[in-house]
Image (cartoon, rainbow, N blue to C red; front, top):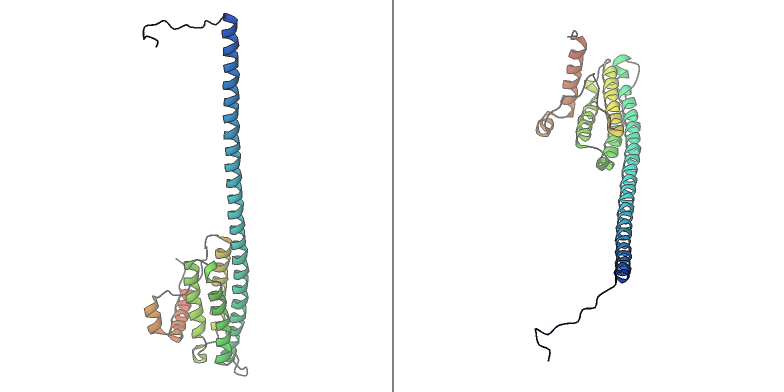
Length: 217
């Protein structure tokens, strides 16, 4: 048994051997450092690749959404054109007694076409845009009552159509609404239900007429 205080033989390295040992250890450290750097670079490349793929996926989703919104906006404008044409036909008897108006059912069919298109694409549009669409649809629906139509109503319909066309362009292209003309009156839903579409149409027509005769500020 070796005693604690017994001398332990220590191998002395020559200067040459120490230099060689340090050289070998240095090479090992260098290899380890390079290996770690390589792993870090590989990890960074992997994370960058994942980020790029995620960006591409999001860009693709965004592009698809915008394309579908553009298609929906085009369909909305098509139905709006049909509805405006039907509204113009509602004014012919007031301007020329020899002409015949569309029936109320025919006119409501044009209104329904726009409503169905807005409903089918509602997930593609903002709440603000759909709120504006609600007022426009109710305004046109009130024109189904032919007794409320006058000859100048055609100019009113034309301005409302221009307004909603501009709003649709803003919605599709993400631009700021810069419309300066007449806009439909905005009531809360409860007031709208109590007012009814015919009265709502008359109120908007009256407000539009007042805006036309009012002198500029």
